[in-house]
Length: 150
Image 1: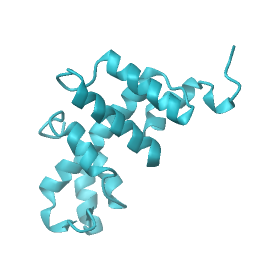
Image 2: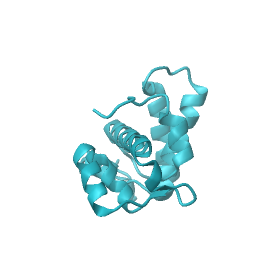
Image 3: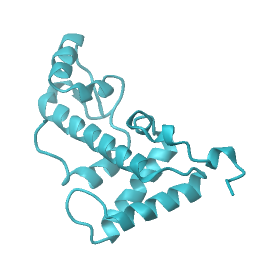
Image 4: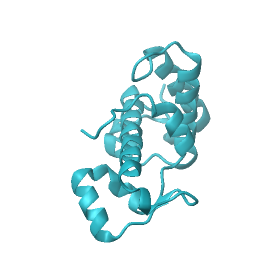
């Protein structure tokens, strides 16, 4: 029997990488906090989480927001957030003078942004703001990202 709440019904079209990029606010914070907890409490090693950890995250996310997502959605969010963190650290290493440590944002001239975006298109997201949940992202991805841009 399908769920009575229309929001709880699974729409596979909502599990695309494009939709993973739209996750923000409380939902993003919850997702990251659940991932961090699983990384801290599980014996998962390497670059990601085990199937059991993903299942726990999926169930708790569903319980909190009454939204069912396929496992692929959470994988898409993981890889998108990892790419954002990698772009953030890449940008930090290259723009020391343009970074405002107080506001945690970059203030660069348009021509410098254009040059950086040609090298790494993922940095364009930081033209308008900083990295959401920077401390949480660092605790999750700092030891799980490539050291150079691919």
